[in-house]
Image (cartoon, rainbow, N blue to C red; front, side, top):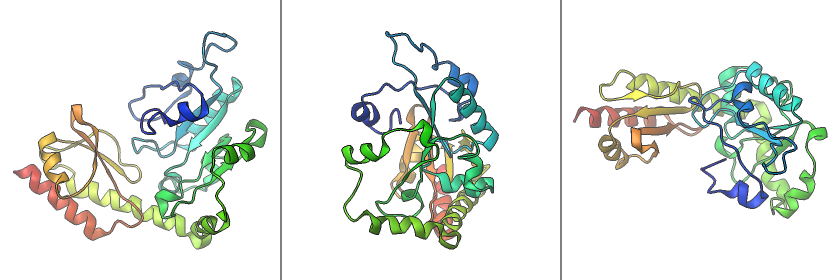
Length: 256
């Protein structure tokens, strides 16, 4: 939200973002308190909402009680809780609990559904779980040009994800492919990991020159080039053959 969207939230919504440093991508009530202050001070942008991601941008998972603690702290201050659900399905698959366990029941007010990262094409949904804490969505979707003509045809994909457990099976597959990749390269000399692999993301640390050689064969992102950190993601359509070939390329280039 703060960096990867090119400043879009601040430009489009005319709001101020307060980033909170965290080593594993997860907020806590204590970390929230470092920026949730200054209420009533006309000289400071007013903290009105807290946004978390599940899974996080670092691939880590919030447990339901961790989200509940954040929601309780935010609500006590009159703030709304937003959950970026870009990888919501991967989180549900990894946790093995119903969606509501870490959304509605945990105090989340509004979330995004994460459909496009789980197989949908140009179809996404904002889900308002607590209308008492969220105002104006029906107007915002028009003014922000997010209400497409004949949207029901796009939205049919969302129904398909919920039909017969398709969305969860796709996410479980993506998570399994990440576990397969991690297992295949764990312990390889010259490679370490900066985060746990709890869903479908692997954060490796290796020499930049090696990463560049691997990247000549397979596309992936530098996460923090200053420390040689890269991000490898698996998806609903990643195959075992994809994983095995990529793992072999990593081992080959690290052995050179």
